[in-house]
Image (cartoon, rainbow over all chains, first blue to last red; front, side, top):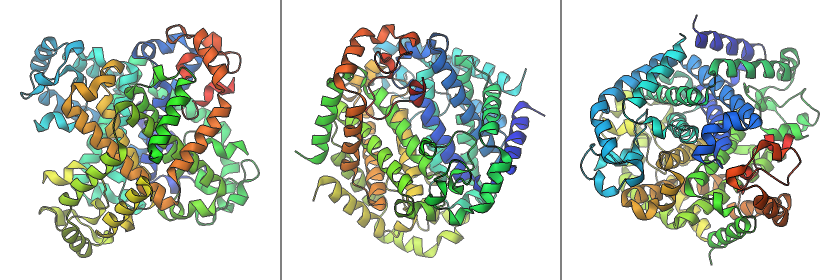
Length: 150
Length: 150
Length: 150
Length: 150
């Protein structure tokens, strides 16, 4: 049994032991996931990107809090997927496969070099895809739609 | 290598191949996670809890979309944890351990039976924990603080 | 001066009096807004839709908490718009104007009558707009994209 | 009638004209608000704080998208408050009143000067409130709880 499958079973037992499975429908669990992600985001909201990068070693208490929030997020995500009957790792890999085709590495890399992050300009985005404005890059998932309406 | 570790390595290669690792600091990735969770929540927002429970078999297109959103959420969560150097499964289990002590199954279950979901009342919450109003139950993570300020 | 303009000025003074304006860039404020909305969502996550409808009169403590969260959300939204130089009421009305054209009332209403919420089916969505599955209705903003890719 | 009251009435008419009021319970509307805030966050996720500060003048298309997302967020927030019977401006002012007392300007300002943003340290947070680590400052709403559990 995979790590995630074992976690899903433990969460099911946790809920069943408390008569809480009655509350764990996908709508409620999606909300609970959103609530926990809100708490995670709050941990980073006043940090600069540089501070966020070193927070785990620079601030023991913030690090413990971030770890706890990531635990909460993982638990609700795994429970939601279990209730829906979905395999998270398969779903994740399917999205990487799709994005691999959508953003070919060679094209994107060449474009990234032409438009460094500190010099992006909306003018450079008038033609489709290369050169993408660098600010839109870095997505693992699909980017905001407006880039592609051009 | 666990499933999640393999996924983390694939995401790293995906980002490196595109020069995108420069954008993947924890602050940005927490935002990207929040954005994807927003899209996931939107899939359920107009469904009743009952419709949400059967959507995966009742609506093939919505099911595909929910699976894709869960893939996106998983990818950003795994990437964020990898950048932070955190083990998601360990963090998740640590939270279940803590909640196991915080909400003893016997006490909670007895309380759940006394205050069924359709008869919860604020009056019943005046004493600490048992009987908790049922509407506050079902959490895997910590509940809203106001319950515990009493 | 409108209510919202007065609120924006008060928030500016609050931040300036504490040397906090340095942290109030749009990226940080968008995160703070997301964090507060996460807390608001958490207030409703275990309620049924029916309980959510009567919570303000049924549970004085939850009502106070919901009011406080809505205050937080409003403050960050107004502060963010002020920093961006945007008028929220104008932006809101512009979206209603756009949605008025996108979802003509007569067409939508007729469709809603033909496909009641408890009988929606993906088959009925194959032709554009009428009959929309009712579960997709009710949006003030744009609906999930997948409905419109058909 | 205030701007927000007029907006609430327009939103009610919009929903009623489409038979959509049946979907507008507080649980669903809180989810819709979260979904729209997710889209707003996505607009800023790959921008540096500096790019976020100038995006409205530097990128006409992103500016239009941000304005549209803020319009959506405002509409769902106003609609939710209207359904709940809450006055957003009153709720917002009540939170500023509370935070005014909680974070006295003189104390906070003195602390901010002693611990500039690039030199914050967890050691400095061991005593309550002054000096707060600067990274926790800038909140309009309540800060993450862990700072105050010390």
